[in-house]
Amino acid sequence: KLKKLFKIIGLVLLSVIVVLIVTPFLFQNQMKEAVKSLLNDSVNAQIDFETVDLSLLSSFPHANVTVGNLKIVNQKAFKGDTLCSVHSISFDLPIKELFKNESDGPLVINSIEIDEAILSIKSDEFGNTNYDISKVTEDVSTVNDRNFKLNIEDYAIRNSTVTYIDETSNTVVNITKLNHSVKGNFSSDFSDLQTKTEARVSFSVDSINYLNATSIKLDALIDLDLNENKYTFKDNKALINKLPLEFNGFVKLLDVGQEMNISFKSTGSSFKDFLAVLPKAYSKEIEAVTTTG
Image (cartoon, rainbow, N blue to C red):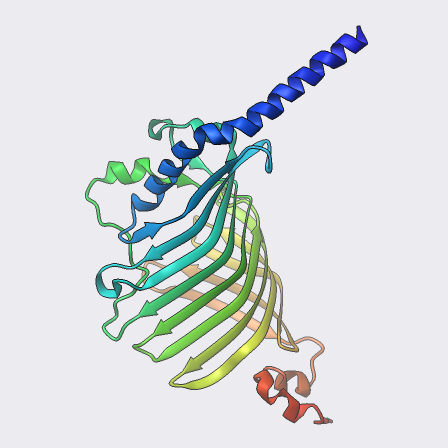
C-alpha cells in the first residue's frame, strides 16, 4: 500500500512539474500583450521591449514576469531622447493574478527587481522636463480601473546609472554603479523600510565639481507614514569615501514644497576623514598629511 501511495504522490508531483513548465509557453503571447497594454496605457512616450518571459518555477508559489531590453523614448519637447533603457525588469506576483481581468480589481505585485537601468533626467532652460510623460485624460474611471495595488515586500535596483541635468541651474548629477535595495511593506499606511544603497556620485554646479565619482554607502531605516506623507529617518549610517556619518530627522511632503528637519553627525572621524570627501584624484596629495589637536 505504501508503495502504491508513493507512486501516486510521484505521479501528482510529476504532473505539477509538467504544468509549471508548460504553462509559461501557453501564456507567453497573452503576457506580452498584457505588459504592452500596461506600459502604454498611461504614458505619453514610445515604449519598446524585446521579450516578456513568464516563469512559474523560479519563484514558486509566485509567478515571475521578466521584461527584457526595455526602452522609453521621449516625445514632444525632448522627442527622440531616450529617457530610460533597462536590461531587465522582473516582477513576482501571485499566480492567480495572471488570470485576472480588469473588472476583477487591481493587480498585486509582491516584488520588483531592475537590472542595468540607464535613466536620463533632463530639465531644459524653459523648465520643460523629459520625465513628464503621463497622459492627460478626462475619463477618471479608466484611470482607476488601471491602478495597481503595490503590495510590495521588496524591490531592488542593480548595476544602474542615473544622470540628472538641469539647464536652468546648470547642475549635473551623475550616479553610477548604483545598487539599491528596500525591504518592507509598501501596502500599509505605516511601515519601516530597510534600505541599502551603494553608488559612485559626481556632482557639479556651474562647471565646478563638488563630487567626482565619490563612493557613497548608505544603510537606512525609514519610517513610512503615508497618511501624513512623512518619511522619518531612524538608525541610519552613511559612508562618503572614508567619512562616516549618522543622521536622523524627517522629510514631509506638503501640498506646496516640503518640510524638512535633518541633522548629521560624524562618529569616530578625524580631520583626515573630512579630507577624504575630496575627489579621489586629489587623495594622493593628502596621504602624507598628519593632523593634531
